[in-house]
Image (cartoon, rainbow over all chains, first blue to last red; front, side):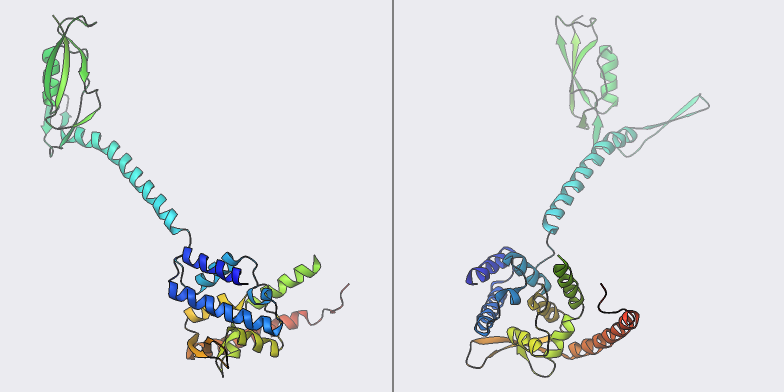
Length: 187
Length: 118
């Protein structure tokens, strides 16, 4: 029976039951088991449970010495989902916000077009510039809030004077004022 | 198989009233754990079923229905003594009332059944 009580001790330790209280329960159990044995009462009668760990856990839980079992793992998992959800939200919202923030065009009766300025977002989305003429690409990049940098590319596939490649790729979110490289076919 | 099933029913029924029995044996005089088992046995409850009194004592202690203190036992090591607190006495009185109601109602339903049903 000493082994049984010893296993209870280990379980209480594992469950984070304070040492003082674990020792109190262990001593209580040991004394009672010894006395029961002297009376000819079986330990099974006293313990009612053959698994010491389950016995120890039930007792400590009923005494209110154990926090409800699974929360730690569950809470950690919950945090993962919250973080992932937040990241997804950010990923979806950022391009939308920076698009809206760049200016809001309202067309009325097909003739007048107002540009209503919005609070400038600190981030912008890189527009697709490949295939555009150099001058048009520079203008688009600047109006998107980026600083274009032109590199002349030789031997490329595109028509002379057009953008054949850009870095970073369209759709990338950058800080406003970041550099976007345009590779223009030699012409 | 049949025996197991009846033992389990006994355990189930006891589970609902064992706390009252424990309170009842420490209402006048405090007792340590095994002493309570002994008192139950002396009053006719020889086995408490498949469970143990310790988790139940733990719950009674947590709910403040029993108060505890450590004291030397007769010639033995110091023991943890339990006795019913004021709220424990109240809970016992209320529990006994509920038990008697249920027992009466169930008895009146089952009264017509012959005990020796084949």
